[in-house]
Length: 227
Image 1 (cartoon, rainbow, N blue to C red):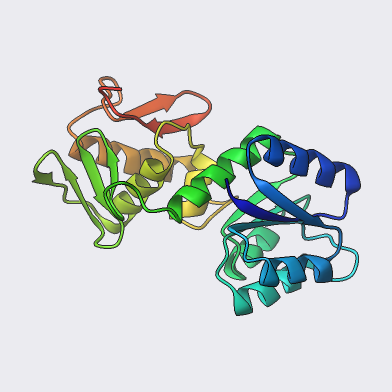
Image 2 (cartoon, helix red, strand yellow):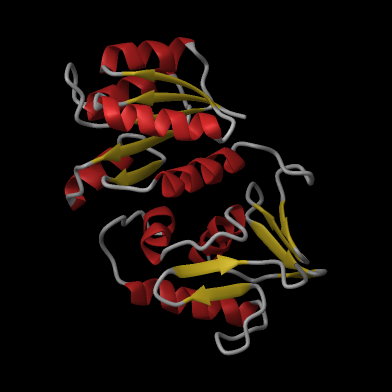
């Protein structure tokens, strides 16, 4: 269970998201204004903040900067603003993830799970284990079995993001956002090329996958081959 602060002025969306997250076991506090949300975010010691940008008393980007000035709590922005420059500006201001309305609660919950996993130590300390694959984010090292993988910085980041969401299908847009910091720009070809290089270093191909499984038209997921 996580402590989540939800800052959303639309009463219907606020109730829907709060109820859905509560049904999944989270402790949710909500606010309809930026200033009330700021108080909850700063004094409530939450594990995660979910916030809109279009708030009645203060622009959400300014609220984001205010929270980030005093706290490193993970922040997911959910908003109707989908322009490239707004997305980039919001991520640069300190948001950890960005979701454009309309969105499904299931999609939001998947983002919440992924972010909470990043902040939680695994059984092997800071290492992430998927089958015989071990990723050490702090050391930026990865091994397969007993063999160290010689990965470029982007290949490592790509593998880390997929490992953090092991078993979940991650869209190419999400990979562009997290690895290349281009939420609505860039080319799918960039992801495809790096996935091809990564597959080669994992000893597999798209035709004969092992760890990396493509879900056509949706994205890619990292799985335990023995699972």
